Length: 247
Image (cartoon, rainbow, N blue to C red):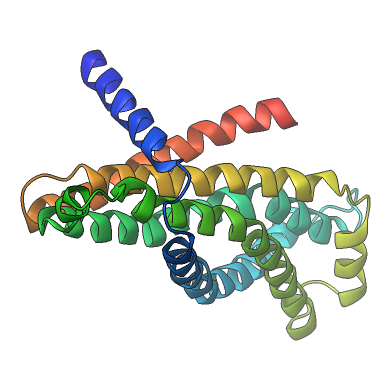
């Protein structure tokens, strides 16, 4: 078990060494990079929007239900919604969801190229396949993740505001005051830093499992599942580490 783990870590680090090389052809790299920006980031925005607005509304409803106490001020619900979104949901939980969407897509795409010998053909032609295929994916999601997190924060708060507008659970005034009360800008930075690390984990680990697929279509499916599971576990581990370090 330990030997297998050490071997896997060594292969992963060696792959990263090949990935982070100066691109041979910048025109090809930029073409791939722009395509990955659309595929990994822009196409993820609809699911980010839907999940964030519903989570913001749910946190507001549950927060109000669980803070019905005369000793607590009315704005506590808005404060709770803001802190939950900034500190945990829009960075960690959202990245776990994207690990399923983006990670499985990356692993299956690269894995399919491996079993159809497209990667082998690149290597024969002298192309650094790891750099050509993986680096644009990593950079695209890492660079776009801060914007995705900020959008998620805003949409989540908007979802909570919708609860205040459409229901009598909480007043608009109390909610708006709560999301502004004692605001700490560092929490936004904290969430962005975590999300950038998680974006790197998602793309690099998913690429690793796809790149080392051997066999047929069944193995590609297994590699995709393994990539999602291991990426999610690693994200949770680094969430604990980063929270301890940064907070």
